[in-house]
Image 1 (cartoon, rainbow, N blue to C red):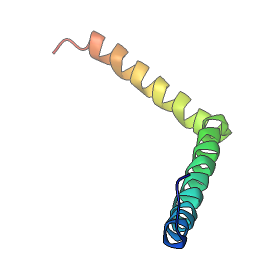
Image 2 (tube, rainbow, N blue to C red):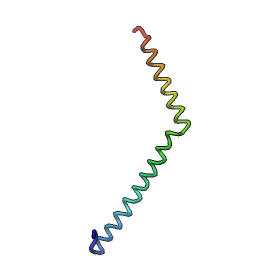
Image 3 (cartoon, rainbow, N blue to C red):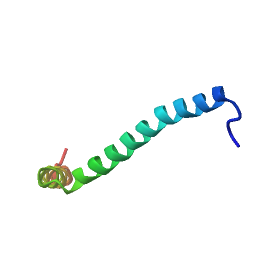
Image 4 (spheres, rainbow, N blue to C red):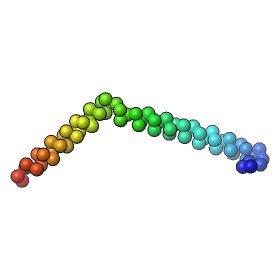
Length: 65
């Protein structure tokens, strides 16, 4: 048994009231932010960045300087 007195039970309840909402918020943030990868605008931006990087590497290979 973790808590033997009323004071200990109060500490357990307070600890749960602090850590449970924080854990739930972190889990929800992870779920929703992970879904941003499937956002069409995000995919478009990543594709555009990849194309720019590819163009820059091709230009740097052909640059005689």
